[in-house]
Structure formats: structure tokens, C-alpha cells
Image (cartoon, rainbow, N blue to C red; front, side):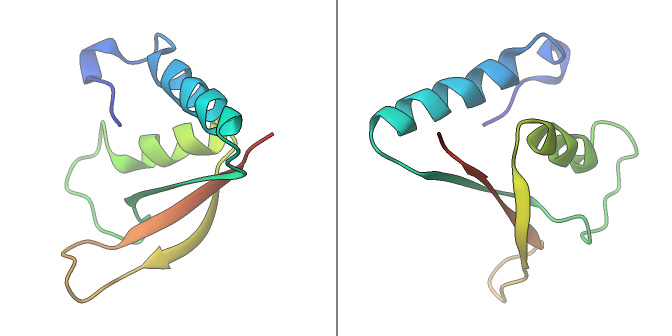
Length: 85
């Protein structure tokens, strides 16, 4: 999931997450998990980076669970999770 840079800060990401939460909750899911670039992974960009992405997910109620660094992956990832109502 992503929102184009020129359309951010308008509530679109929040709306996407909340719609997913609503649909998953109706289907009986109890937990929503996602992967994104880990904080320990070096980034070349100072702006529009994954620090902003992680901050957005934290603001949406996700908590980091574990960092993954698998041999077949080029970048380290972090698993974030949110308990569903």
C-alpha cells in the first residue's frame, strides 16, 4: 500500500488502513500485520523516507514486533502489527 507523494497528508493513507481494518474485522480477523523497511536499514534519501512510513503506521496503532534480515532479501524489514477490534 502506498499513497503518491503529491497526495499525502490528505487522509488517504488513514482511510485505506481503516477500510482494511473494517473489512478484516468483519471477516473475523484479530490481527493486522505488515512489513516495511527496518529502521536499521540505511537509507539514501533524507526526505520522503521510510522513517515517515514507520511513523505513520505507529500513529495508526501499529507496533513493531521483530526485524527480519533473511538471506534471500536485499533489505532488512520490520514486522508491525495492530490488534483489531
